[in-house]
Amino acid sequence: MKPKFCVLGAGNGGLAVAGHLVLKGFQTTIFNRGQFRLSAVRARGGIELEGAVEGFAPIELATTDAGEAIREADVLMVVVPANGHRFMAERTAPHLRDGQVVLLNPGRTGGAIEFRNVLREEGCQADVMVAEAQTFIYASRAMNPAQVKIFRIKNSIPVAALPAKDTTAVLALVRQAFPEFIPAPTVLNTSLDNIGAVFHPTLTILNAARIENTRGDFQYYIEGNSPSASLLLEALDQERVAVAKACGVDAISARDWLELAYDASGSNLYQAMQNNEGYYGINAPPTLQTRYLTEDVPMSLVPIASLGEQFGVPVPTFKACIHLASLIHGNDYWAEGRTVERLGIQNLSAEQLHLLVTSGGVW
Image (tube, rainbow, N blue to C red; front, side):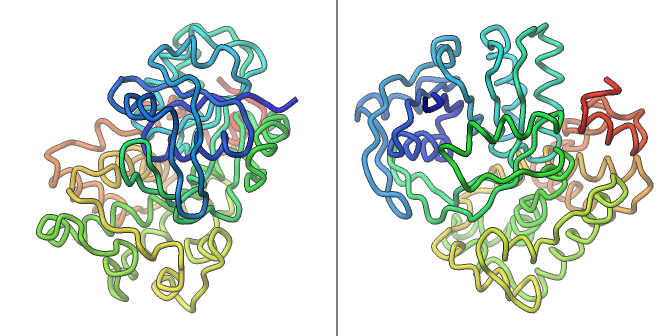
């Protein structure tokens, strides 16, 4: 029998996932914390998809009742900014049942660790499998309420469960709907191969004046990048790879990831990004109140930099970006982000951390 899905989150990503699932023939419900994003779906009776996926997907249940939404689901696709992972864990914890899969799309950095920590804090006794994707499967944007354009479906999306021994069982379910998902060794790989941490905050900070002056009326990855800007992206990427190595992970470079995910190649990172057809047509965010800073800084940059500090890896470019983003928003992103202390792994050696993500030991 086909697995049943519940999509947690009704932003453009959640609607894209839910609509595509329905068009593929999978029973799908939607849960969202508020009514606003659900009202258009209810009014239209479903979701209109265009671009790489075309069609109208009828949605039978779109609700703010978590228990009702996930009751019959085999797979819970969490498609919200990483800042919302804790909320989703708290809201679903009383309703989860044995055998369900929770997949974070994506986990950013440390998402699965945080989600499972929260379930334990909430006293959840259900034997569920928690996993995270390295990146989001689509490049997509909301065109209108209940209407989403999918610009591109990525070729392959690494997925790992926490602990890694559950990854095979997770993929046995979700690959029936998304064959693009492939196994990753552990959640350290998916967390530290977080390419959004390289691209999003840096390009947003470098284009801060242009975003405010044009309200994002330029192609973000294409016109918002340049050979010089890419040098900063490459410096950040090198630090990320070094932190991963200290954690025992052989991380993929951003340039190699572009070729793997999009078939985009070049002699350097700038050329590879310019050669990525999937980036054309994607405009910059209209304001600096964007998840590229509010999500990616505390949930991607901070945990990687914090791991770097824990294992003695210099991360000056990471710290500079965190500092600049904090100044722009008047927030202390280090204080509110996923530090090793907040994830509960501050006392672990690299070997103990590896044991945690492979077998669930140490906790």
